[in-house]
Image (tube, rainbow over all chains, first blue to last red):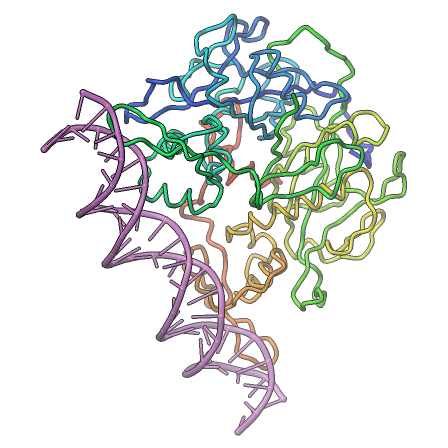
Length: 259
Length: 259
DNA sequence: CCAAAAGTGTTCGGCCTACACCCATGC
DNA sequence: GCATGGGTGTAGGCCGAACACTTTTGG
């Protein structure tokens, strides 16, 4: 940008695309070898060369006149009809090797979470299909490593309760939330301590209602409280001519998308 | 990327650029109001419209056939002649508002650290000048917010000793390292506890030599040990046809650049 | 001997971990 | 009542914050 340096400017700007890694909790009944829930993600089948017929991350082009987040959101919508509850920039990939002989390609990759409600239909639908993250098919381009990176990053992000609550419904029991954490980290977590830690965070609000399951004691139903200190957060000094207040949560841009 | 969605493809790909936020410890003698060291960064004066004459982040174009890191490294080299010890992708900015009426512009922003040795000449040199981060001039585009974001992110990255050691020389005393931490966080840090924590990390190696300053007790000189577990790190599953082993440290791509 | 910075010891409290233990419910 | 998860209590350990203290040097 900016100051151009004269020497060796090899024209031919690479094209830019957007890809999205979307995660959701697996369907009811699904569970990993250790019995806890698993994460799933949707892939789309490519209808062009290269890698025609292979599975790939949903994505699309940059929409001129829209922010990157909006472009990601719309790319997701038009390929999978999903509307994530959380969307955040992950990383930009641009190594020449990744295009496998095609034109050079820069991909801005977003990371998204959708709630249970959005995943009613885990069955294959046109060219979209959901896969458990520990059992993915062969993928086009370098999408496999992108997913691995996204999963790795996810684990550190889930320290914050608000992220985890994006994967369950609006309301949930502590057991359900606990399940999400175990699914993401892949590790068993002491339920008793988990409960205390979550409640101590001050972000959970008891709805007063109970969920009865089977013949055991009913569980209290909680809701995430979006008020109070939004935790570690970076706020841009009031960007000019930009509608929504733009904040960077933790170490990347988080956005609750428009309708 | 990938699956194209037919509707509304408005050609005109925005152009891509690379910008770099480089940080270094201020020159000897420089100190903030509270007496501790400050961080400085180099800016370049724009020689074209828009914002001609304003200060801006160093940057350049994508080099076709090179990775993004290499492009960032070379952009930095050609504008400032600096060779960072640490380089990591920060964020990609692409909001339409940021180009201020010009053509839409996507900037992949990198974050870099240079050691003391590189900053011998803090004086203005051609079109490059160093500024303390708490006293920046007006900047072109949205570079001010980019810098603010970079600084904010820096603070969380400095938990790891290896990052901090990139700002001091190869060898350093614990006081010097302590100084870096205070400069980055902007907060006073108990020296006694700091010492213990650093030594406990197992990454510091005593050179056996001492540094004599003034009439006080000489300080032990340490060196960072690059062996052992490289801490939290993500390793790509051995990318095909890609020379150097590519690892993602913490939550972004770190790279020690080639010569 | 004194000032100044290096380096050590010690206490305290919070938080995380592990695990034992009660509680409410349906069958 | 008894199996099943929901929920609480509690003891121990680890780690960071705070701060008093000793050590080594130059003048």
